[in-house]
Amino acid sequence: MTAFEKTAPLAGRIAMAWLFVPAGWGKIMSLSGTAGYIASKGLPMPMVLAAIAMVIELVCGLAVLVGYRTRIAAAALAVFTLVAAIFFHNYWTLPADQQMLQKIMFDKNIAIAGGLLFLVGFGPGGFSVDGRRRA
Image 1 (cartoon, rainbow, N blue to C red):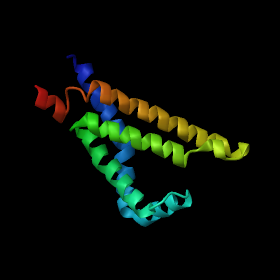
Image 2 (tube, rainbow, N blue to C red; image 1 turned 45 degrees about the horizontal axis):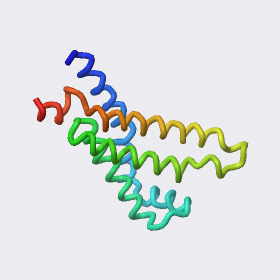
Image 3 (cartoon, helix red, strand yellow; image 1 turned 60 degrees about the horizontal axis):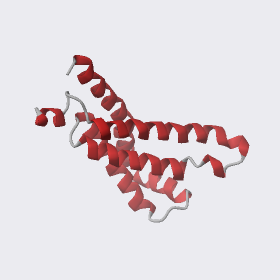
Image 4 (tube, one colour; image 1 turned 90 degrees about the horizontal axis):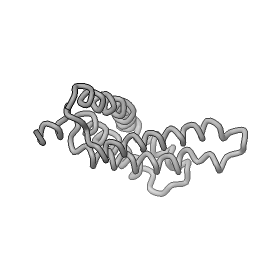
């Protein structure tokens, strides 16, 4: 395995964690605010869903960062990201003059899920806990 094949997945994992870990930490700091936002979308059990979102973002984000059980963590984050896109960036329900930003956010979530699925398919690379356990 070349140095690039080891470092590129590490850089990708850091970039993914850059998104999810602070978001999960933010939910710890304002779980009720997150629950309020979830409730505003008409979803049931907003406090439970906020807690689930916090755990997925923080725990799975950290797992992806260090490359521990990466495929499982990335799969959970991919599903989470797709669900978030559907319920929170549903641009198709908005008036035409309000759709653009939510469509961009929806498309961004789809792309992030695609990157996560690469981790599911190809693993975390050599510089990871999983990589060390295989070696």
